[in-house]
Image 1 (tube, helix red, strand yellow):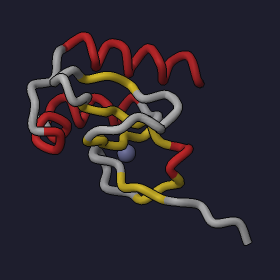
Image 2 (image 1 turned 120 degrees about the vertical axis):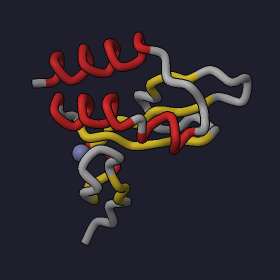
Image 3 (image 1 turned 90 degrees about the vertical axis):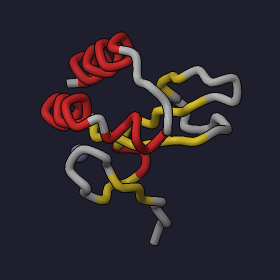
Image 4 (image 1 turned 180 degrees about the vertical axis):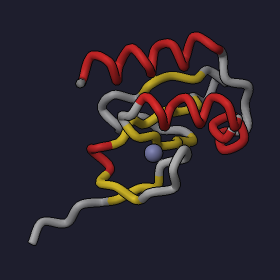
Length: 87
Ligand SMILES: [Zn+2]
């Protein structure tokens, strides 16, 4: 059996395969970006590729709390775009 690392989505708290989630990372210089390859160093958080989930996280502020940084509105626009592209 293949070992699939799993992570918990900040929006719905469901555990999913890492590759089914979007990773957002806080870089060492205090930036925040979407880590498409899930390989960047830094504090990371995971979100479903799901519009409702992203909106829930935007509303709750869970992402900023998890990464201990203010989340720019553009990041959520980018995430929503990313999810729209996938589906
Ligand atoms: Zn979710």
